[in-house]
Structure formats: structure tokens, C-alpha cells
Length: 381
Image (cartoon, rainbow, N blue to C red):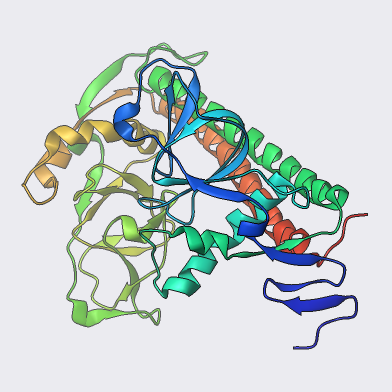
């Protein structure tokens, strides 16, 4: 592959001709922590990084400064990273990379390291998953080094701004989810009434107010991925974001689910709710529930946790048609009130979906920016 003018091929890939490369051990000090889980003390003051993901708190610390942390083993090895500038202590199975050379901005290093380290250890181990990391895997990793601290800081600042935007979106989404949960609790139980509605609410069994179709799996001999027949919905593998996806098709239609049906899992995990966005074949892991408006869809989502009491069997949870039919729900007599409540909750769902889509686009933007800025393909003026 021809390298464009002003760039060069290096062990760290193609970078600008005026950039340098070096290995981590020449740019920072690498060590492991000295604490273990038993050293943890409640109600302390400083972060204590345990393994790869959990941040607990103790009342002493061994480090005060800028560092990048990554797991030496366990969940998230090679994938989970922390950047911190302050007082903290570190578990003995966590690597601390600190005391950065004057040639290297710590946050620039964190961005490059977190974007490239997992791929490096996959190449070194030839495994698709990694359960431990040796110190030399970190020490010998090549890092591109822009020639000035100003350029490194500019790159770090640009990506930090995107991180701040993502953090703001995450907080806003969490707040909106909490508001949605509170609205469900108030509106779906009749504790808060929408203006203009005063009729009675009743407790009904699901089988009294809705049509229920229990799934039945077809023979696997009729499965295909070519699109022949209908998509088969067996459970969570065929659901994404509460909507059906097309994964496996079947030409043997045992039980027919219609577009718009509410789908509920009847095998582990029991009670999870989704929506059929096209006609489907219902496998034995789900049932279809039909109701004239969206009130029941939101009601069943609110009631998802309650299905734990219907657990059956020692191998996995399941419920049968009698369990589903006997489930009790509370609903207003007036169909207009049902529709109005559903409209409020659907609007909140739409707002959440828009925010999540914006967050996904921002993440994609950050990924693209990292590929461009951290390799010097795009230079900041």
C-alpha cells in the first residue's frame, strides 16, 4: 500500500512524517497495585479500583496524580480502562500506568491506549477473548508521539469534548428513564389521572381482556436464513430494543404472530415484553398478546419484574398458558383513558429513542475522530 506524501509506515501504523513512535515502557512507568479486596474499608474517602470495573472507596491511598488503569485479569481484561488524576489506591490485579514522560500527554495516551490495546493483545495471544494480561504486553506496545505537547493537548481536548457530550447525553437519558418509570408507576396504577377522566378502574385477568397465542416451535428441518417463510421468534436472541428482528426463518408456521402483537417471553427470562413489527412464527419461548390499544403493552412492561414469582423448574424459568391468562392487571374501564395513558408513555419512549439515537451517532462520531486524530490522518491546526 502506497503511503501518501508527508506520512510514513511504522510499527504503530501510518503516521505523519514528523511524528515519532516509542514503546510504553520508555514513555511511562508501569506497575500493579498493592491492595487486595480484603483491604477494603467502608465509608472512606478515596477511590479504590478493584479488578477492572468496580470502584469502591477506602480511607487511605497510595497514589496521587495522573494515571491510566487497566485490568490484569478478570471481566473486561484488555477492554476496560480508567483515567484518573487525583488520589486513589489500586488492586493488585490492576495495572497502573503513570509518571508520563514530558514527551507524552497522559490523556492523549489514555485515548490511544484504550482504542488500540485490546487489538494488540488479541494479536499476541491469538484468542478471541483474553483472561489475563502480562506487563510486557503493555510495556512493548508502540505508541505514536506527536512532536509537540500542544498538538497532543489539542487532540485530547477535541476528544474530551466529545466525551463530555456523551456523558451529558448519558445523564439526560438516565434522567428521562427515571421520569418514564415514575410516570408508569403513577399512570398505570391510577394514582395519577389524566385531565378529563374520572371513571372506575378494575382488576382483570389477562385472559379476560386480551387474546393470547402461545408459541410452538417448528421443526428445525424447516429453518433457513434465505428469507423463506416467516421470521422465527424464539426469545431474546430474536429481539432488539423491544422490537423483533429477522434472524432465522421457517417455512413451517406453527403459530402465527401478527405485526403489532405484543410478544412476551415465557421462558427464561420470563415476562420480558417486545413488539412484533412484522408477521412472525411464534416459537415456544414466546407468546403473542392482542389488545386494541397500546395501554396493555406499557402495562406489561411495568409488570415485567412481577413474573419472577411464576418461576418454574430448576433448569430455567417458564410459565404456561394458564399462568399467562391468570396474570392480573389493573386498567380503566374507559378505552379513551387507556389510549390517552398509552399516548403519554409512547411519547416518552419516542423522546428516549431520539436521545439514544443521538448518543449512538455521537459515539460513532467519536470513533471516527479517534481513527483520524490519534493516527494523524487529520491534523488539528
